[in-house]
Image (cartoon, rainbow over all chains, first blue to last red; front, side):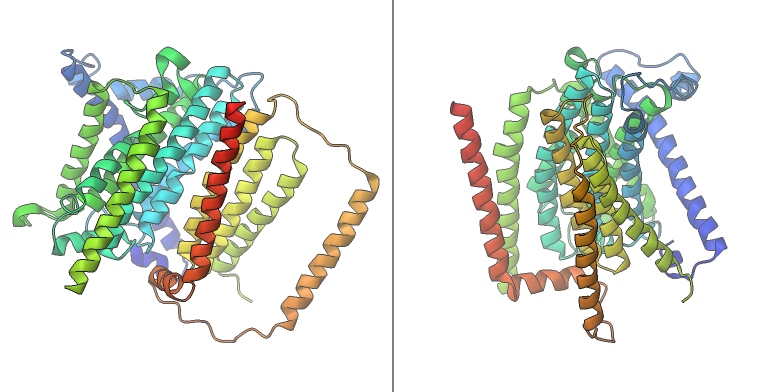
Length: 334
Length: 168
C-alpha cells in the first residue's frame, strides 16, 4: 500500500486508493456492528441475562436490524437549532476517528501510511472529535445537550494530557514516533507492557475516559442528562455519533496493541500463526476489557473525575517519563 | 508550470487558510468565528505537510485544534445562543482597512522579492523529528527553557486570579 503514495499520480492508483478506503470502511462497519452485539451479549452474561437472542440465530442479526431501523428513520432538525452546525457536527466527530486508522500497522505488510510521526498523528486527530461533540451539543439548542457537550470537553481535554504523556515512555524507549519502528523495537526486546506497565495502566484509564464510556460516561449520563450531547439527534446522524464512538474503540485498541502489546509480534516464538491473527487476538482482548469495565464499574462523580486526572494520573505519567529517561540514561552510560 | 497533485493541494490548503480568515472576520456568532479560524489552522497544517514538515503540521493540529474547543467552550459560556452581536460598522473604517491592507501586503511582497533565496533545497531526511529535537535541546535550549518559564508564570497567574475571584 505504502508505495502507491510515492508513485506518480494515475487514475488506476486513485481507484486502488479509493477502493482500499472503502474496504477499510466496510471492515470497520462490520467490526462496529458485531462489537455492539458482542458488548450486549457480554454485559448480558455478566448480569445473568441472555442478551439479544431473537433476531437470527443467537440474535446475530440484532444490530443489523438496529442499523436498518436507524437508517430509515426521519432525520429531524429542531426548529430552533443552528441548522448548518447541527448537520455537520456528526461529520466533524466521525472523520478524525476514521482517519486515525490510516497510520495503524496491522501486520508487517498491511498498513496504509508509514508516517514518521504516527503517534503524534493519533494524538492530534483524536483531539478534533471533541469539537464535533461540543458543536453537536451547542447547535442542538437544548440544555441537556449543551451540558453534555461541556462536560465532555472538560473531561476529554483533561484526560488527553495523561494519555499523550503515557506515550512518552514508549517513545523514549524506542527513539521514534513511527508505529512500525515501535513494533520493531518490541520484536527485538520485550513487549513494552513489562517495562512500561505504569504507562500501560495510565493509557487504559485515560483512554477509557477519552472514549466517554462507563465509568467515565458523564457526558451522556442517562439519569441526569437524558442522553447528553446527542439528545436532539435522530436517524442517521445519531448513528454517526454512535459509530464514531465505536470506531474510536477500534482505533484506541489498535494503538494500544501496537504500543504496549507488541503489535503483530508472535509470543513464545509461535511464528507459524500469521502476525495479523496475533494482532487481532490482542486487539480483541483490549476490546473485551472495555466492555468488561462497562459492565462492572459504577459511574464516577464529576468532582472525583477531574481531581483524578489532574492529581493522580498526570503526576504518575510525569513520574513514569522521568523514571524511563533515568533508566535509559543509566543503561546507555553503563 | 504543469498541474501536479502538489500544486492542486497547495491551492486547496491556501484557499482553506484564507477563507477561514475571511469568514472569521465577517461572521457574527462566536462559535461560527471559532470554527472558521479552525478551518484556517487546518489549511496551514496542510501546507506544512506539503513542505514535508509533518511534525510541525500535527503539532499545529494538536495545539490549535485543542484551543478551538476551549475557545468554543468559552464562547458558549459567555455569549447568548440566539442573539448575534452585530457591531455597527463605521463608514471610514472599511476605506482605511483597505488602504492599510494594501500597504502591508505591498510591503511584504517587496520584502519577499528583495530576498535572494538559496537555490538548492536543504537536506531533509525522513527522520526530521529527531533533527528538530536535537536542535531544540542543544542549540536552542535557552529560548526553549525561557518559553517554558513564561508558560509556567502564565499558569500560576491564572490560578492566582481565579482563586481571588473565587474568594470574593
